[in-house]
Length: 255
Image (cartoon, rainbow, N blue to C red; front, side):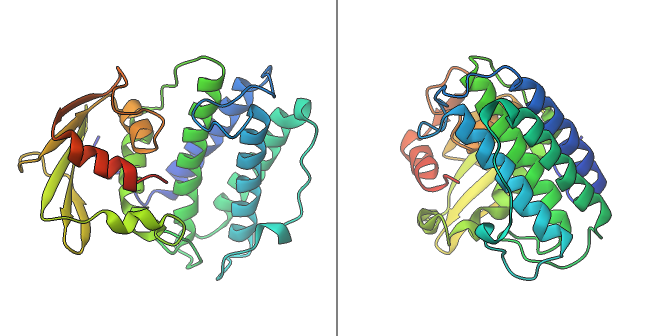
């Protein structure tokens, strides 16, 4: 598998999203809703699932009307049930989201905050949003997440595709610039080279260009590193080279 083979495959994303939501509903079936989420320390498990269920309903409503502007979430009517009903609530909202995505033209132009201004942005975005928050739920239960390698590799591509576009809600992204310093991120099946240039940053899949710092991990752990769920020093992550350069990336790339 190459890192980009599924980039525009809307059906693939919809299929994987449905599977991920169903797996998450099973994960939380007997959760302690008051448990603190270690990777999102301001949230309890109930907060985490309420957030994700709301995101699913918000994205699904935008796709249903092929929204040309961002819909305010407060204008979308959904009711959060008592915590014991949250597994079914996440399942029902997920089914509606996936149905709306499947019924839409993947190539239809619509609003998104990222690099791709089409319906297909949302099937890809919601898959990775759900996979990372499923990992949060597993961490809360004291379990180690293992995201499918194909999903994780595509998730890193998607993260890098969208990062520049996140400036409006993550202004630190503007600090990701430099004098052509490079970082390499590597897992089985894919390599990413990120270059900090005066205008910002660029990235590609170059396996041979020199890099000042290199991060090695399994695909799942590397995706979780990009999203701040694994940190430098985590035993699942191996780092070689300039830690200061990597710390600058970590500090300013948080989404």
